[in-house]
Structures are given as structure tokens and as C-alpha cells.
Length: 502
Image (tube, helix red, strand yellow):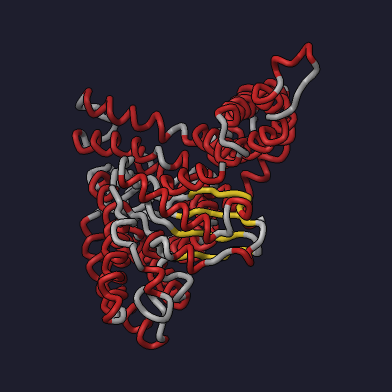
């Protein structure tokens, strides 16, 4: 089950990755016309509306992205199946159709159906479409129907299946939606305290990759909170909308980089050079793009006490920002570019105070990390036996490009050629050998910075050999599951591994 949920989290990364494009367009548009929706400028109106075309259709992107990501071979037919399923469900369950089917007036239709086009439905449809694709994509029909065999069959089966799913949802969706709203309302009703609780659990769930599920409740339109979309659309309350985003900026831009400095200062003298190469690259990724995994995975399993402190600090940061009503927004994470582009949005409230808060949190993180490392003698990077192997050769491998946008975080590392590609191939060979070779690997899924791997025999896995490829670390998440933390170039390494497995 945990592996399945992790795959869902990884699949969500694909549609979420397009949000920075929307954020860039809307952010620039609001810089031109801060009053909203470009009413005073055709150029601003053009950019803002272009960005909203993505933000307003995230549910469709989720249906397509999850169907593609959860499919066996990530074929385009799975994506088409997701789109077909979403169109069938949302058309049959829109208020006008429901009113006709139930024989009632439009005003009498349950309010839940007015919110049927949401990310929760998109994810549900994507999962069903992927399952149908995996089941029917290799099926052969009788000769008379052979044209519809293979990968042409899943979209058809998805359309048929969604008729029954829509019928079921007609009865299930209203109470389910009501439950989701109640859950979100319970947390949001706690105000700043609720934001702090959310921030704490957001970090705690990262090691198992389940934080995406929690984020969906508060960031998207699953429980009626929809913090990201409302913030960027300017539809909300100043100082309130954005409260589930703002507190991350002081942590990702200031706190974690300061923590990285503390870990460098606490490293053994003989390992400081290697530690510096890892910490500098990972800290820059956190500050500029808001991608924190290269840094967090460098210590979360080696020093869980330190990671718990980090989660507590994150919760406190969200609580403080929400208490004072300081808001800024993003589409996925909270780096500098996100902060810069969201600065002039209509619902950005005293965003400069997040910089002040960030400076304070830099001090808290630095001395808090130093105290914890010294007091508990934690095995952070550069400390303890075996750290040199994990750090060796890591220089430059976590370098991050940073095409991200106010509202979104995308680590855009430019494709490389020549010697760089051979470097990826060499790293892939070492990792694959450490995993026990091609025959021992059942599945490899690249996430934002990690390879999620399912192996046949964990006894054949050599973690030290994997680390000799110059990666930050590994994490066994189950009897047959292991995560290999590669960094922001994970996609290129994954591609090379797939070549070796063929």
C-alpha cells in the first residue's frame, strides 16, 4: 500500500511541474497591473489569463498526469484514457446534467456537484484509467474487432467504466465532499494553529512521499480551501489566503540553508571539503527553487532527531506567518523566484516581513542544528563512519538550475551532452550494480530528486556501492523497496538506468 501511495505522489509531480509556467505568466502580469486581471493593461490581461488557463484546469492535468504516471509503460494511450474518463465524469455530474437526471430544478442540486471539477476527482479518474490501461493495453480482440485491440482499447474501456463510476459518485460524492470539507474546516478553523499543525506534518510525511496527499487538502480544491488557486486568482481574504504557503518561505530560503551551514561547520575536518560541495549545492536548491529534498535527505534518516526538529521549526514558521497575516504564494514550493514573482499579487500581505522572519529563522536553524548535532552526536554529512563514501564525488551532482516561478517550483536542469551524458551513464551503472543488477530490479520510478526502486531480493542490494556513485544517500522503505537520493538530475540518471535494463 505504501509503495502504491508513493507512486501516486510521484505521478502528481508531472502535472504539478507545469504550474511554474502559469505562475510566471500570472506573476509578470500582476507586476504590470497589480490591481488584478489586467484591467488597465492588455498585456497584463493576456499574461494573467494565459496563466489562469493552467491554474483553473489543474484537475484535468491531474487526471492525465496520474493516469500516465501510474501506467505500466507511461504510454500516451494511458494519458488519453485519463482525459476521456475525466470528461465523462465531469459532464455527467455537472449541475445541469444532475438536475436533468434527478428531475429537479437546478437550484435544488446538491452544492457538491458544483465542485465536481476538482483535483480529487482528477486523481481518482487518473488512478482508474491507469488500472484499466494496465489491464487492457495488451488484450487482443476477435479479428472483426482487432482494430480496437491493444492500446486503442483502454480509452474505450475507460469511457464505459466511467458511466458506472459516475452513477456511483452521484450518491457517494455529496457525503464524501461534505467529509472532506469538514476535515479541512476543522484544521482551517484552528486558524494560525491549524497552519502550524499542517506545516509540521507536511515535513514529517516527506520521507515516505505522502506529503502530496496532505498538500492536496490545503493547496487545492479538495476540501474547499484551495489556497494556491485562490491566492493567485486574487479571490480570498487579504492576510488569510496564502496562510498555508507563506510560512515555508522563511524555512526554505533561510532556515534550511543555515542548517546546511551548521552541518558543514560540525563536519569532521577531513571531510569538510566534500561536505561543503554537498551543502552548497543543496542549500542553493532550497533557497532559489524551494527544492529541499537534496538537503533533507542528506540527514533525515542518518539523524532523525534533527529532522524532527526541522519539522517542528517548519510548523512554528507557518504558525508565526499566519498569526501576523504575512502572505506570499507559490504553486509547488517556496524559493526565491516564487517569492519574487508573488510579491505584487493582490493578496500578498506584507511579504517583506517574511524576509525578516527568515533572517530570524536562519539564526534559529543554525544554532538549533549545531546544538542538536553536538548534544546527540548525530551522524550528519561529514560526521561518522561511512560518510566519506556517501559524499565522495558528489561535487556538482546536486547543482540545480532554477527555472521556477512564483507559485511553482520546477528545477529545470538543462539537458546535457557529451561528457555529461557519459557521467550520467557511469553513475547509472554503479547504482544499478549496487541494486543487484538489472535482473534484481522490478521497477524504477524517478521522483523530484529520488529514484523509487522495487527490487526482488533486498539481500542483493549493496548500499555502500550505490553511495559510491556520489549520491547523498539511500533509504529502505520496505522489504522490497528502496529510495536512491540522486538530486535534481535524477531524470537523466533514471533514463540511463532504463537503457541498461533493456
